[in-house]
Every structure is written in structure tokens, then in C-alpha cells.
Length: 385
Image 1 (tube, rainbow, N blue to C red):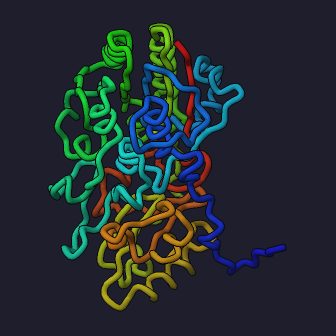
Image 2: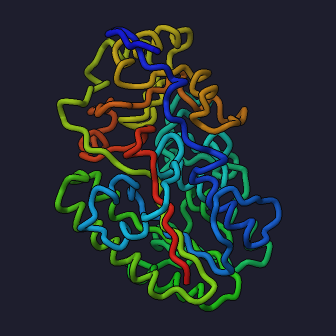
């Protein structure tokens, strides 16, 4: 039996890598598309076919958070009975997960491999959620979306989301195809999604809600503010379930869960000479870091990060993270240099913040990004019309 002595760092190969190809978020739309007869897809998840399908993605709605709050999410908790969660993907963060949902591919192929990643050859970071600086979207993510291929196959395909997202680069590369229906409130989105199902004989509609994630970042998942937002999400899911037309199925899922990390468990990279030595760029986010070394310094950076953090985080070289399947079974050549020379994923309640370069993110109470169950496991709840 393996014994951990006090200086025995975590082995990256032992991290609970996402279940790509068997029970991951990237398997959901390909399974639904296969059931709808869209060419080129096969059903991986054990779901029953339906002619009209709605995917409702609630940002930040982790499986363990639902189960921990039965009084605030009674309808969602009832739906968890007899079901198992799926995994988000690594890192468990919004831009990465939305691209996995929409393309049906793991991060190693779609290439949105973190909250911020290095632009190869440019020596600067790109925020993939805000798409700054503006990189050519279709060079960055060249694969077609499942929505595009479903639309081409004659399925009535739509996304119902905030009007603000209608033409963003992230929408274009991850969630486009068919008809975009901009609706401002959760109720309007729910009602429009249900209407779309009723209006079409064979339909695929996606809708999205961001408020729960926002409440978790601002107040933490242990807060009354977050629980009240969860309660309103629960009511929205019930509202949609009650409007489902015949021959339809609703799938409720999420892009990640969330964990509150206390101030004393945060290490400030910008004030830590040891962790910052040899580092050219710090990418990712507090619980899932891409660390880009100056030329020739990668081995030293890996050694120091392993020594300082190796009992609380899985600290891997790029090669180790790829070999362990963190980003999927395949990592495309164009994606490899976007991954850090060192990748550090939190196992314990810890975060590597950066108060000067990331002032906003450093103040967030609730965080996500890593492979712990509370971050990584997401629901796949089903309601039949």
C-alpha cells in the first residue's frame, strides 16, 4: 500500500481525471444528437431518445451543492433520485465547459483549456470568457458545434440566452448554430425554450442561467444569498418541467460546482517570491493554474511548485497533465502550447490568488476550476414531457 510521508507530493496520475468519453459534459450533446439522427455522432450516455430535447445549463450548479441543500432545491433534489452525476472537465470553469458542451469535444481538442491561457508565441494571456485580447475565434476553435451540425441535419435548433451573448466570440465558437433567441430574465428564457419545443416536431434547444454562479463568487456557497438564488433556480426548473410538451425531454446540467476558500487558505502569487521565480505568465484561476515559465526555467518552476504545494495540489508538468488525461484522451498540436509548462490543480481547500494582476478574481469567495468532487461533479437530471 502506498504510504504518504510528510514530503511525498501528490501524484498527478492519481488525480480524479474527468470521465471523457463515458460520463462527461462533452458527451451530452453528441448523445442527444445521435438520438436525433444527426450524422457523425454516437450515443455515449445512457439516455432514452426523445424527439424534442432541451438542455438547461445552470452556471455553478454542482451536484454536491444540490445534494447539500435539499430544503432550498426540493425539486432538483427529487430529480437526483436514482441518478449519478457526470464530470465537467478540466479545468472546471465556464469557458472550458461551455465549449465542451457545444462542440461535444474535450478541452484538449476544442482548445479552450482554461479561464486564461497563453497565446502561443505572443507572451501574453488570453481571457477565454471575455475573449480579450481579441483572437480570431475560428482559428482559436475551428471545430463545428453540435448545434451547427444538428441544424444542417434538419433539427430545429436554438439557443435561448441573454441578448448580451448573441454575438460574443465564445458564443460563436461554442454555442452557435440554428437560431439565437435573446431573452433577459430566467422566466422569459424558460417560457421561450418550452415554446420552441412545442412549435417543432424535432427540436434541440439550449438555455442558460448565470445568476447562481455570480452569487457564489460574490457571497460564497454557504451564504443565504446563494441559497436564495438556488431556490429561484429550483422554481425555474420546475416551471420548465411543467411546460414540457409530449415526446420531449429536459436535461438540467451545469458547467462546474464551487467551493468557498477561506482567506487564510489563499496564497498570493504576486507577493510570493518563491512561487513567482522563473514564471513568465500565471494563467488559469485560483484552483487550476497554468504556469508558463521563462525559457529554460520550466524544470525549476515545477520543482519549486511541487515542493511548496505538492501536498495540497496536484502539480504536473504539461506532459504529465496530458498523459494523465486531464484535458481529454487527445490534445491537438495547436492546443499543447496553451497549456502551462506546469499545471497545478487544487485537492485541498486552497487557492493561488494574484492580488495585483487579478484583483477582482482574488476577492471572490466561491471558487472552482479543479477536479475535486464539489467542483467537478455536475448534475444530469432528466424530466420527460
